[in-house]
Amino acid sequence: MQTQIVLNDGNIIPQFGLGVYQIPEGEATENAVKEALRLGYRHIDTAHAYQNERSVGRAIHSSEIPISEIWITSKLWPSDYDDASQAIERMLERLNLKQIDLLLLHQQVGNYRKAWISLENAVKSGKVKSIGISNFDGERLVDLFNFADIKPSVLQVETHPYHQQKELQEFLKPYGTKIESWYSLGHGDQRLLDESRLKKIAQKYNKTVAQIILRWHIQEGIIVFPRSTRVEHLAENINIFDFELSCTEIKEIRKLDKKQPYFTMTYDEQVQNFLSWKLKD
Image (tube, rainbow, N blue to C red; front, side, top):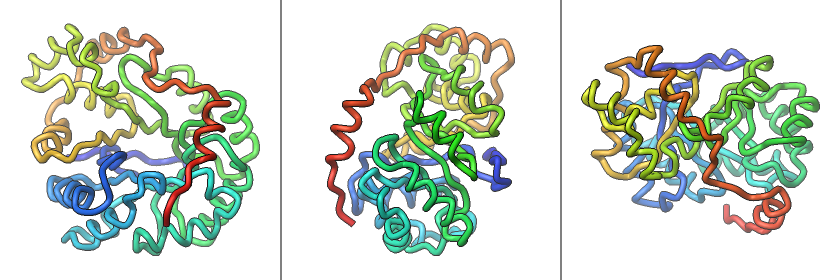
């Protein structure tokens, strides 16, 4: 049975889902989402920058699962920030939805303050249920929380056993903001997947190391949505709700924290890179 989390705005989000980053628009995305829904996934994480929102929309509408039971997360790209209200309308059209469950600002560059006001207005008008941010850190993270009337419900950042984001979690705690994990399996780093502590725990429960890592995210209260297009991996990833890690095992995994991200880019590099992206609708 999947777990759910109550966000700081009172909305309830499925804690486990499917990420569709780098899955091509069209049949690949549609098939992955349809198979995920068939297996019991109820949270799909996409973004304008992924350029596959239309495929996500087609997949969820062709499913036998009621739309009301499927949580859809998407993200606005910085090029959307100056006219975010219209960008939200276009996103609703791409997804073929009347309301987006969770909408994030994808990056911390550009006019994020103006965009955040548009997100708050979208909540008030009923076009979006919950709002949050992705990849914010440092002074821009603090500024957004100080500026926002509606505090972010989630912050989506790189999180895995080698980069556990403990300081960030402490910062977010007073606001009730939940962490959503990307690179949840350490970007497929074989060193992480070969960790002896994880292998020992996996053997005990007759699970894979990937399943142990995903279960660790769940028990740490982190929202997680690993990406896959292969049926066997989709099935493996969601098969983590029939066991529970002990307190001792959770503590052992916490000892693996190296504060080691795989994605490193300075703020100036982010500005140069992300503001130059031109996305199609």
